[in-house]
Length: 134
Ligand SMILES: [Zn+2]
Image (cartoon, rainbow, N blue to C red; front, side, top):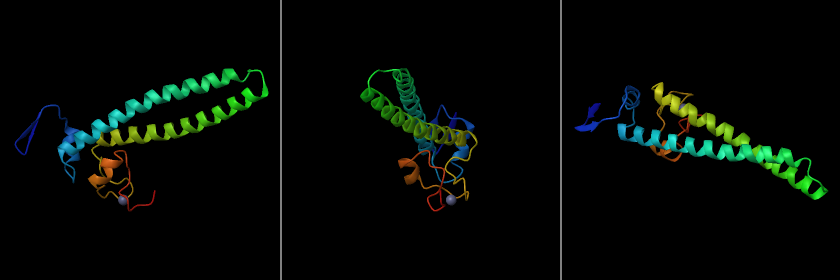
């Protein structure tokens, strides 16, 4: 339990407090962490759907008829592309959450500078300050 600026934070851990050592307030860190966790759950759900789609397509490989085979192949490449993007995003979200635990959340992984809150608000998993090249 932490008291900050006269406000009481009941479910706060040390990592959260460490994140506000720099430019972020505790409310902002809580809000961003909640958002990251929400997006992670949603992504994991959508990945299960993608996984199922890929499995279905593999079974369809034995489908008769040329058109359905072409269809299957197209669906498979769509699903594969989607899965690749989801895997990248999953690691970005997990890394951002682990940066909260490692007390470096909100700091650019390249230059160590502060990532503006406005940027984190739009992309909570952003690892860079916006001035460093990705
Ligand atoms: Zn930077």
